[in-house]
Length: 162
Image 1: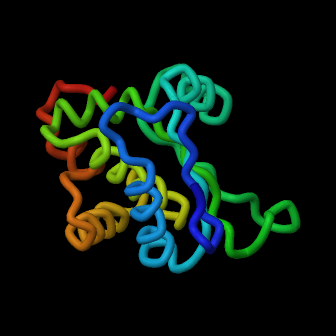
Image 2 (image 1 turned 30 degrees about the vertical axis):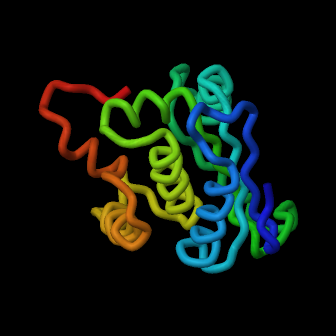
């Protein structure tokens, strides 16, 4: 599903209770607001594909919930207006939604926001809280439940992230 500007969301399989058109509208909000008009592409897939991508591109042989792939700089880039790609595990989204008490669709929105912030060049592991502040501000504006960075920072000591 594409917006007129070119961003798209593709489902390998639509998770139960998820409305693809509603997520396409949300993608448009992310594109015009967070991404400042720059296009990006999202694929909602399964754990096996996220694990493969995580292993191939990050050297981590583990399932994860969201991965971001910024567009290549220079002539290889399709256009200066293209940010890159986001891959989301629908399985992880469903499990995390249950764990945090909201819908799978809401969780996919949280993951999309997180992915777009990474595509915008933010990195919560090294930016001194810049991405966490941006995620918190956008979550409030977009009326989203708690975000990924917040969850990790609130996790009790000794409890590891997946």
